Length: 203
Image 1 (tube, rainbow, N blue to C red):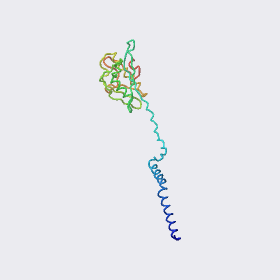
Image 2: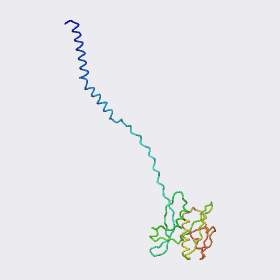
Image 3: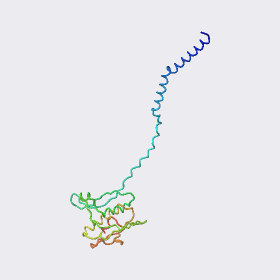
Image 4: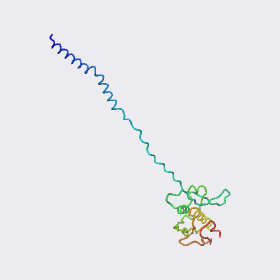
């Protein structure tokens, strides 16, 4: 065999060696690469810690406002007394107007069940409440002064006056009946002094 023939055979052998190495012995590395690629596909991307949501400060719970209404009842000795009842004031409403409307509407069913009652006739209406810089005028229907006798009239007017005074701004309050300032109440002739105060019926 000549020199050139041996050289060609060696060259072919070398090529065969590299072919076998690349296609057979390097295969495990190719599988590892594919495995890493597959793992990368299913690994969740690293999430940065989300910025903490800005928490809206909880609105301070609005403090409830109540009006006080004077009804009537009996104590343990069966003596007539005034019963103070609290009612929650709706937003945006005048304390005085709401309280007087609740007064003329009368006690709730529950309040009645525990002995609370009112001497104010059911059909009495508040005709208007006018507040100026120096005074408040409360106008009511004339039937507030009819029926029931002197004791009933005295009690209902005391209910009205006490409820008005406790729920009004610190201004003089004048009671009008059917558009005219009240001076004498009902057929019983109970005098009423104005502006209203706790002793308006006792003069």
